[in-house]
Image (cartoon, rainbow, N blue to C red; front, side, top):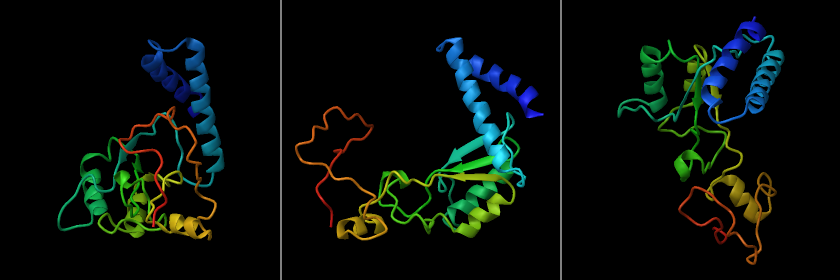
Length: 189
């Protein structure tokens, strides 16, 4: 059972990774958090075949990392994955695959669709028959070209309450972020 063998393996791994950097109490806290997430997930998914444990391994990828001019990129990825990666990874974590206007897919225009060049929801469903699938829903990013932001400007739903405005006198100089463009912009559209 996981909560005997699995805990030992995870503790060993976290010790190997973090011992040079963290005190033992912090590593133990981290382990407790990991065990709790696993326990809660597995308890909520008791009827499903999906279980996470020390054997869970993820590959994180964009849906278009592997591509061909002839096929939708998610199909190309799936074929490559089954031939080369499936024996090493049992879960695929897709970074945003929605239509977007920028920010490597994170400026989402429509959270209900998949970017056409990547594929369709049925392509994702086919992959899920062989593997666990995880995907970013990206609720903290949105495109100025998307419905939510357009509705925000019109004070309509959905979107009317999804964005914040900041007074021009607000000091943003202490905000640190890994971007080369300004934090705030004038209203769009």
